[in-house]
Image 1: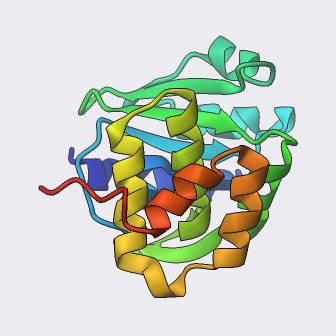
Image 2: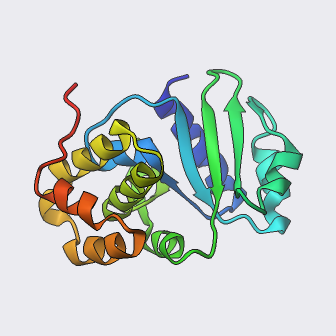
Length: 189
């Protein structure tokens, strides 16, 4: 099973479950920017306790999913993993928190056609900001390169005011300025 096939499989399961979500991480940056391979998928989910049985039911076959880990994710660090037993690829599920930026990302998520499937996706601006924020926590050329790839592809359509506002809130203004000035470039493949 390829990364793309797994992404669509997970999206279909989430759509059937009625769980509100959006795709973020490398697959979202692939959609908006310059694609690269990844070994995991990242989803943010709104997971009230009453929908946990829906999630468990949708992922009971073909996946390793620990119910205790799902329930424990309702508290810090607000994250659990699912492993696809067919490909050994990992899916990271991040529980939507009441953090202002995460709330904004969730409200701005877009319904898109992703490889023929209706999917909820983080906006290009939110993926850039999220990548820069994570790069400030755990520096990684991959994060900044992904953000630069989105800027390279989406440059004229980006909401600069939104980017500036949240860059200030997230403490990544300098990184964003370098990115928009072309000082941070996508990794050449």
